Image (cartoon, rainbow, N blue to C red; front, side, top):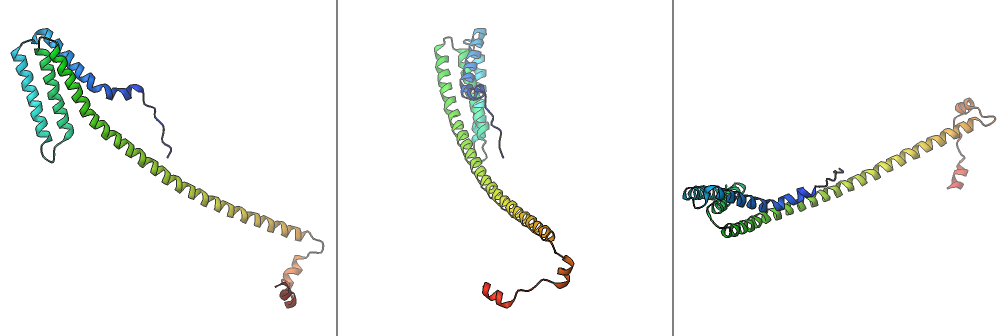
Length: 202
């Protein structure tokens, strides 16, 4: 019932928070590298990125449509569409101002979407911790009751053993008395108290 306490490394805590900024920064960097290698003002490359971004957005729309829509697939495809659009603009534009503007916008949107999932995950974590604490308290109560019951049984056993020891000591002491004859006592039976004595005692 005692669960091990696992201390998370600080990188494991910071990495999910930095993931959206790292992703958009990587796309911006790759787009600018692509720009420097001939994608600047290239209509063919721009058309390719438009087709890919539109295809990803369409896949996201289909994935999120209807009751059986999968939010994970839809979110992934929409993120891919936005990333392709950012990379396409960063590769096509000749200046850095428009790519930086789109990078800031994409980063803000990414953090906005991620914050929703972080809140849900935090609520689930808190609910799980509360359930675990309640379960531990319930089991602790059961353990305390069982410990009290076991202690009572042990005390009963001890008192029985003490009574048996006292009885054995009394029998040994009686047998050691001078003039004690167990055979005569067995033949005669136990003496009965007179009725007058019984009445006086009561």
